Image (tube, rainbow, N blue to C red; front, side, top):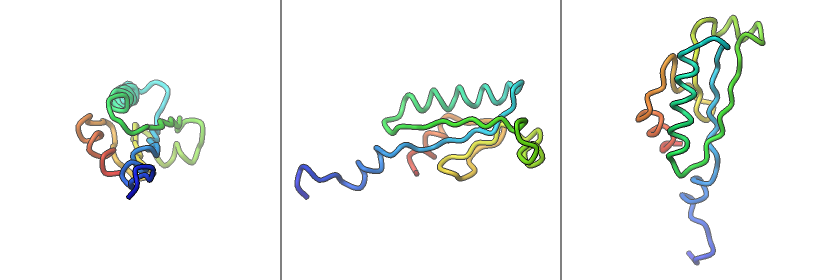
Length: 96
């Protein structure tokens, strides 16, 4: 491979990983989860895009998630519920 070609690994590392957090406004666990996600995202080489969704803004989401927040998806796959472990999140990012 010539030096101007990107390896699949470097291309994948440049692609942002989308993290979606289903949350509620007055949810201390949600705030903790988002803080953990942001802290880990700042410490890894791969870009992370964090999206938050307030389940109370949509009756269907409210029915689906109710009090089961935060609910975290990484690359559209369920990853965490209630709490985000920093080491597990870092490992999950490395897998994607």
